[in-house]
Length: 386
Ligand code: SAH
Image 1 (cartoon, rainbow, N blue to C red):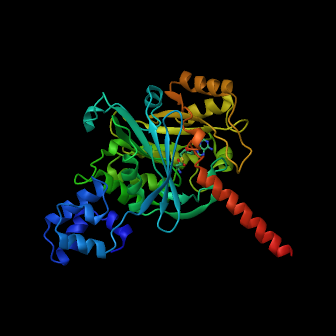
Image 2: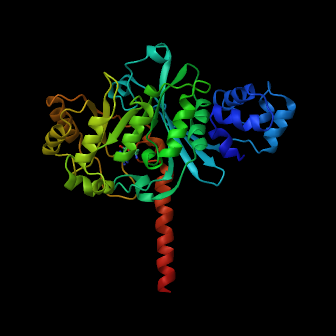
Image 3: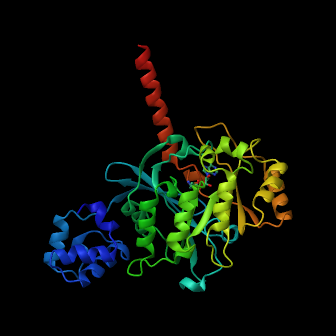
């Protein structure tokens, strides 16, 4: 039993594992609660477990899969956690206080079902943005993680651990209300661990998060969208990075489009088993001179016709690996107006946390990776030439 795997086990799996070594069944639930509700992975602190059982856990090497390396706080209250895995991989998560505007733009997830999860209106809600991979294989031209390439996927234990660690950095009165898989990586390219992480987070014996408060953001991997829809009956919120209204342009911005072109993607969105009154979030990163013309906005309106959705415009955040830039504010507003006139609810995602490089696609470590990769390539080239 490795430390990483202990946090990835569901209560049912604990029951059979513990049953096999002669522990009573109720231990499974007790242990799961320590790990997933109290975020405690030090056996010595699990006070209601017998000393013998705690010793057993210690011997098995139970410990947290991530440790907090640094916390950067931005003036707008956004907090970026830099977390280190046991092999040295660094993972980032971002705590984002929900302002009225961010609530309205629904960048995080819907706020129309507050009663359902017992979220009290008086407390201030925060969204947590978590990562699923270290780097990313999708190669989107405007994204730091995409330019870095994929180093490795995170284990389910490392995915859920981001949530438990982040909870320690909430201020009093703050409530973790929404969880978005919008950090580094492509969650649907790392489906099994993402699925397990969601199962752990939504388990009634654990944090018991409502699936409606979880949003998975994808570049548009069609088989993954279908699996997510089937596995959770459409209850998990879906955000899709569209970024271009036609295949010719999208091929250039998102290489994965060649494999899953827009007609296939739109069909997958139409089939996603959304509950009534829920909508898919369409993300559209606006890049100056690339996809920001009024004609693109009109074409996007046509493309999305008939899909229950809202559109989130994200003026591109600058990254080291690219010269691409955000359009001028006027172009952003015009783009928004065209879509609004076509009947879409369309919001510009406010830039949060950029002082601490926590804005979309900016996770600093990804930029760092690109620099390191370039340095390695230069070294290799120099070596070859010498
Ligand atoms: N792989 C998932 C999650 C990635 S990040 C996906 O593609 O959806 C979440 C969002 O940030 C995506 O819409 C992504 O395209 C966007 N993004 C990435 N880099 C960005 C940048 N530099 N500026 C603005 N948005 C960016």
